[in-house]
Length: 284
Image (cartoon, rainbow, N blue to C red):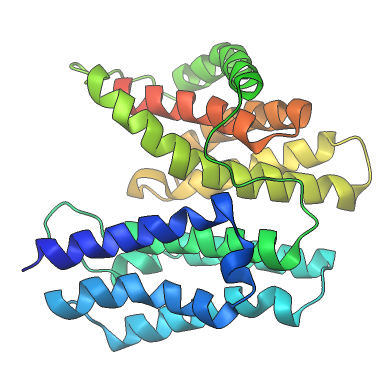
C-alpha cells in the first residue's frame, strides 16, 4: 500500500520538474495551476500512507502561493529579486521539508519531493513570469559547454585538493563504489548541479554583476562566499566551517566557468563532476 502512492508521487513530481526545461510558460501563465501542481504530489503520497499533516499542507500552500504570485504582484526590481532569492534560501535552509514530508519508507527521503517542487516552481516563476534572464533551465549541455565544464573542473583540482587537505577533510573511502557513481553523476547533474548553478550563477551572480556595476569580479567573489555559506549545514554538522571553505573555493571555479561562458549548463558540468567524485571517493 505504501509503495504505489510513493511511486506515483515521485513520478508526478519528476514530470512537473521537466516543465521549466521545455516550456515554462505553460504553467507560468496559470499561477493557480502552478499552485495546484505543488500540492498534488504531496496529497498523492501523504493521504494513502497516513502521513498527511494539516500544518504541512498549510506550509506548502503558503510557499506555493508566494512563489507562484511573486512576480505577478511585485515589479522586476533589484530588491524584489533579492527578496525572492532570500525566500527560496530560507525555505531550503530551514529544513522544513524534512518535517512536511515524513517518510513512510525507511531510508527513503521524501523531502526530495519538496526540494524538486521548490526548484521547478522557482524556475518557472523566474523564466515564465519575471523574464529578462539569460540563464536557461536546460538538462542537456552542448559539446562546447561540456568541454568548458571539464576544463574548469581540471583547473579547480589543485586548489580544492589543497583545501581538503588543509581543512582535514581529505578522508578517502576504503571501498569506493565507482560504478554507482555513474548513476549518481546524472542525478547530481540534473538536480543538484542544475538547480544550484541556475540560482547561484545564472541568477545571483548575474544579478550581482548588474547591481554592482563592475566587471563581475566582486559578484563572482560574493556569490562564491554565499555558496560556501549555504554549505554550513552540510552533513548535519552546523556550522560546518571546514566544508563551507571548500565549497566556497569549489563555487569560485564554477563561477569562473559561468563568467567565461555565461552558461549554466557549462558550470553545472564542472559542479557535477566535482560533486560526484567527492561523494564516490571521500567520506563526508
